[in-house]
Length: 327
Image 1 (cartoon, one colour):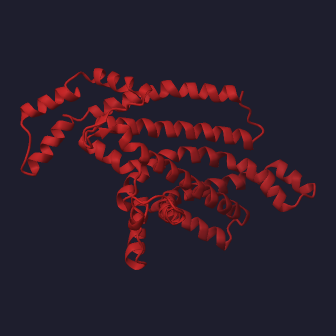
Image 2 (image 1 turned 180 degrees about the vertical axis):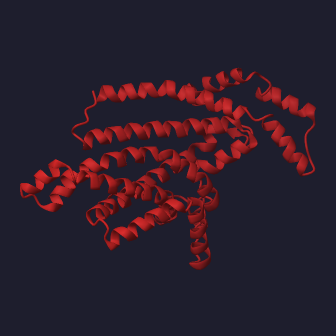
Image 3 (image 1 turned 135 degrees about the vertical axis):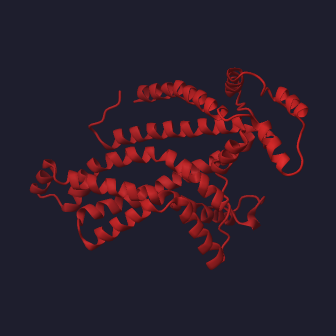
C-alpha cells in the first residue's frame, strides 16, 4: 500500500507540471497583460498612466520577456515557496491566498460531508422503498436540487437570513468577532457561518449521488449473493448494510472525488454572493485583471486538490471493498 501511495504521489509531479504550463499559456492567450487592463480601468475613471510609464513597469515586472521565460522564472520559485507577485494586490501570491485556500479546503470537506451524510441514507431508503410515496418525493427533490444553481440558493439564503430573520449571514464571521482573538463564542459563530455555504455547495451533488446510490442499491439487491444471504436467515438490515450497501457505495465514492472541481467552481459565484473568503472571488478577479501569477497558482492548487481527492477515494475504495487490492 505504501509503495502504491508513493507511486501516485510521484506521478502527480509531472501531471502538475503539465497542468501548470497549460494553465499559464491559457492565461496568457488574451491580448495584452495586467498593465493594459490597469490602463483601461484608469482611463475609464478619468485617470491613467502613459505608455512610457507602462513600459517601465512592464520591464520592472518582467512582463516584456517571452512567455516561456516568464513561466520558467515563475516555476523556479516554487521550491522556495515563492509563487510570484500579485500585481493587483501588491503582495506576494502566497500571502494573498494562504488563508483563502485553507477556508476553501475546509468548506469543500464540509460539503463532501454533507453529500455523504445525506446521499447515502436517502439512496438506501429510496432503493428499499422503491416506488413508495417517500421514494417519489425524494426523487422529485433530487431533480429539483439538480436543476437549481448554487448561486440562486445562496441568494435565497441571503434574503431569508438577512431580510426575514435579521441574521448576519455574509462573510465567514459576524462583525463583532472581526480581528478578535479566538474564543468559544467566535468558534461557534464561525461554524454558524460555515454550514450554510457548505450545504448549498453540497445540495446539487447530493441529488446526483442519491440517484447513483439508489440505482446501485437496486442493482446489487438483485444479485445472487443477496438471495443467498437471505436464504441463510440473515436479518434484512444485515443483508442491506453488510452486503448491498458495500457493493453499491463504490461508484458513489468515485463520483464524490470527481465532485471536487465542481465544488471549487461553484464556490466562485457562491463566494461572491455570500462574501466568504474562498479562492473563488480572488480567482475571478485575477482572471479579469490578467493577474497571471495569482490565477496560475490557484489553478495549480485546484488541480492538486483534485489529484489528492482521487487518491483518497482510491484508498477508501480499497478499504471498503476487499476485492480491490493495491500493490
